[in-house]
Length: 354
Image (cartoon, rainbow, N blue to C red; front, top):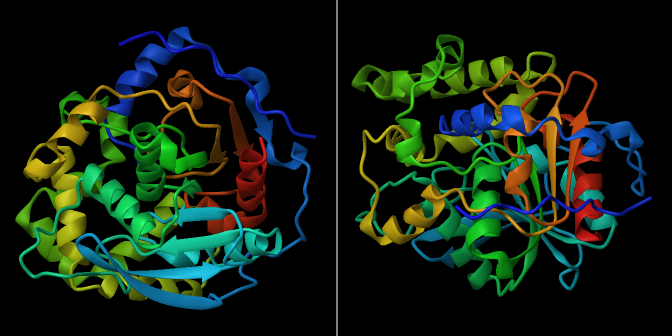
């Protein structure tokens, strides 16, 4: 792979794949990000103050046919405003952005938050379509959905599965991505890299991936979907005191008839235990090369993220354009947009205006 140039700083006043471990090892020679590793409180705020959990619903929920799906999505802000696409993770849903969306709308953005395949109101148009959860399929879904909405270019932001999807869009379709915010950094992976074993402590964090590789795990997730999701929430955000109502609003999205199949396929595909679809082979070949991302980017990490995530030094060199990393303090876990909506919304505005 060609050498990647040093990231230029922005000027303004997964769950990861197991393969990220390879970058972590290489990154020991890179050093830490240094001046770009800014605390959230140092970023100038241009937004009204908001308490996390202020909002419990969106202004509008809509549906549109796009590619293989009928996509359910939330929308806020002016229809002619610059577009911001916000992507959720597993086992979460669009409510991760229920406080972020009105903040961005107040700043003039058109904010669109889709349910990924296998979540909420999103449905497959055909019973014959494989319930495929591989990384390229999720990214292609969002491109098809943007096409359906006639969105030529957007700032894209996400965490967990959503961050990986944002990374792929920025890497493979940079003409569609104005800028990006990515929690936990660079999350593009490959089945080849995922064959590399991790140290035992790191493998332990992926217990659910190995559980899902078994028929017992599939049956267990199907039977205890809501209980499983709540456990993941607690482990991934150990200092987030979310209540039953907050979890319940998102857990309803896991009742999607394809959710279990998509989840199981996603994690089995990563380990090479389930095949992808041939139509995505060319995209996966490009992704396996771990392409650099050139669009302006802010990566973020909560100081109490209990989910597997790479060290920032492991991915700093993967961003070849304007780049900054922010650590969000205050016991912020894996679901950073919902736990720290002010900081997340500010990052979107800052990277869009960079």
